[in-house]
Image (cartoon, rainbow, N blue to C red; front, top):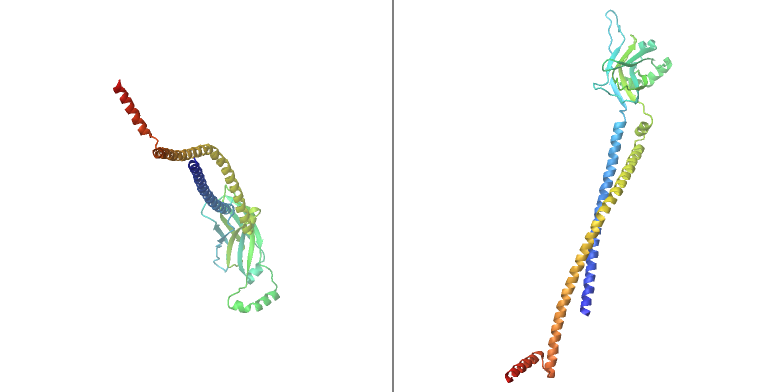
Length: 337
């Protein structure tokens, strides 16, 4: 009995140890798996937030400036020096259907590089006209603006020339002025008639200039202003907002689908665990019962042998002798009859 109890206690302890070990290994596997999923999901969400902000930035923000050279043409005079027509040029912005962003205000400026020559000083004010046309020749908008050289007195001109004469000799500085003329201050693209050609005409035959450039600058306001002039702050806010909403959606989706999977798989896993535990208990009990049976049989045989030995030592007849005497008595009784 003592041995059987010890065997039962040992088997129960072994079963508990094996069960706890299996549970510990399974929990470690689940922890590692969940940790890996969390790390991979976090990295993926961060990169997705950065990608979404980058895509939004390049799709929402327009190009800040476009520069096109203006090649002014005129008709020269045959009999005298100078030009006999107004300088004019057709500036092609793009060969595509559309260059400017719809709904975004733009400033269209004309940069004239003019020398401080006596002809330009005597010219005074002059008019510059511009027309915005679409690919099919539709007139989208037109304007005319006046301009002139900045006035400098004779004394100021002389002092400037004497001060910067060394650099003027070596060609680092020239006696010229950059006249910036704003043609359109708040132009917005029309989606039905996108601008592809700008016609520019200077209404003066006595003007002198080195070069002319057309610059189209985006006039940013609101969110675009913050995104361009405060890029780091807007990037942090945008990426943080994307992270918040993506994490919120991921958490809600995980909670929703995780509860459904746990409810469907919980009963199955519970029944499976119970069946495995019952099988383990049955195996352990069968092992202990078989061991107890073998021990009981051996104990019974050893007890029988010890009893027979005690009877032989005391002179008492054994079971075999009693059986043989009974057979002899029965045979003698039969002969007497």
